[in-house]
Amino acid sequence: MGKNVDIQSLSLDDFDCITIHDNVHIEENALIQPSQLTHEGLVIQPITIESNSTLRNNSLLTQGQRLPGDCVLHPLHTQAVQDSNPPFEAISSFRRFLSVISSLLTAFVLVPYILLFAIYLAVFLSDLILYLMPFAVENTGRIFLSIAISLITIPLLTTVLKRLLTPKQVKYAKNHFYDIKKNLVSKLLSISDNLLIQFGASEIYYFWLKCCGLKMGKNCAITPGTNLIHHVDWVTIGDGVFFSTCQLNTSFQDRQGNIQHQPIVMGHGSFISLEAFIDRGVKIEKDAGTYPFVYVPPQYSIREGSLYNGRSAVKREVQKKSAFHNSKLKLFLFHLLRVLCFSLTLFLTLSAVQLTRASMEMPFLLSFVIGFWTAKFTYLFQLILVKWLVKFKFRPRKNSLMDPGIQKDYIFFIPYTWMCQSYIFAEWKGTMVLNQIFRLLGASIGKDAIINTQVINDWDLVSIGARSLINDNVRITGHMLAGGVAGEYINDFTHIGRDCVIHSKANIIAKAKLSSKTIIKTGSPVIYHRAFGTVKATD
Image 1: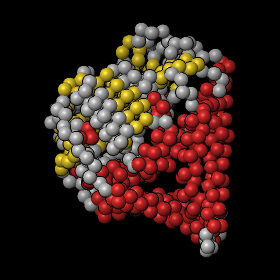
Image 2: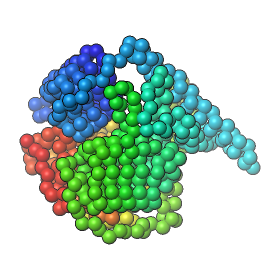
Image 3: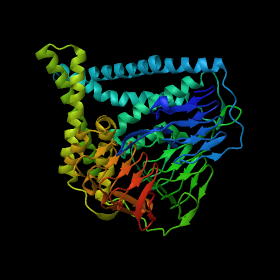
Image 4: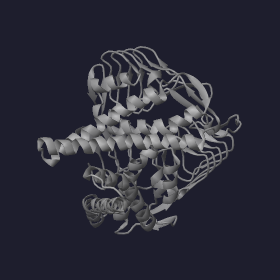
């Protein structure tokens, strides 16, 4: 690695095979991966990034690639373009020293003490509640209530600090405290967002987003897994907007080192499809939207009733609006069931810790490890149980997003699945254990298949042939949304044949049928749907 290199991404693997020259800027979530799994074994080819280059958010750089100097690799792209602008000015040694100190201070002092204060506040409130109760509660119940209240106090404290520390002006200069404030607010928002993911795609989660500064209309649907919480001050969402799993960027650093923001505006009935990337200053007008897996460049305007396909906006038929069919009672029951499932996980975890310490006289650390794995297996068991009892089975169908069955997915099932993918499936990637879990959930997995990704959805509709290799960061789903909130939600079969190889960041979607020995390139969408046409990106 050369001088004046700024790395914000954690998605770097095989460090010995990566060469970075001077004045390189790597943004968050940029993927640099020299290795890929093939039938010949793990193939590693070196990656070189030459001077004065920039890798944007969610850009892709994989095995054997060489990024030329004075280039920019845009989000969701694998090929760079020339950048005529001069590189950023060199960062002084004093500035670098301050950056290191701020990172250490934030990670090991500020964030732990703020979280500790929120937990102490939760303990105080739980003791106050128990004091006012007419009956006595055991110590386990006190701990359980404290943890439950901390799920409120941590996001509450985060919201207050975010409001106090986040600049509201469009343009502002970096100062010596910028890194501290940015790191602190960003880490706390990420922690709170993960805590509240239990209530993702619900009015509880939307209320927290509004408290943090999001301007949001009615009857919207926002799925988990976005980075919206880090850009809420600069995003405006109209009524009936569908916000799928995607990424946003509202800020940039000019050549003088100042931070500038350009707002993103989404009109009524607009939608962002799966894994799209929306850059700063984009305006999506009424009933407009994007194709899946596209990059919308800065300050682009998608006209009313149009779909952006990655190159231009094409007209689409605007479908008649649909109204929500779910009653408030049904929504309340879904939220209550989700809270009860999470409460059961907490209760069994605490019980495991108490029993191991009381009966076996184990050290606290070992009891904590047992409780940790109890929580994981409890949550996994609940997912399998809920899948078969509440959801039953995914079947091919076409519905409106406002259909009660689809709303049940977004209100209850999708946040539940996202939690398991992030905290349980990810630990067993590439093992036979994960294959067996997917089989229990309804997927058809062939013999000796290696699945190195946790993101497989709509399990009953997904089949993976024998000896197929699925690399990291691949998404396989059996659904597709066409037409936004008022449009069609399609569930259909997704088939991957025998001996296929799917490289990193590829996306396999409903109705995709891959024949045997197919190889899918890095970052390729495989889509089949009448609203989008047929797109095949194979070798």
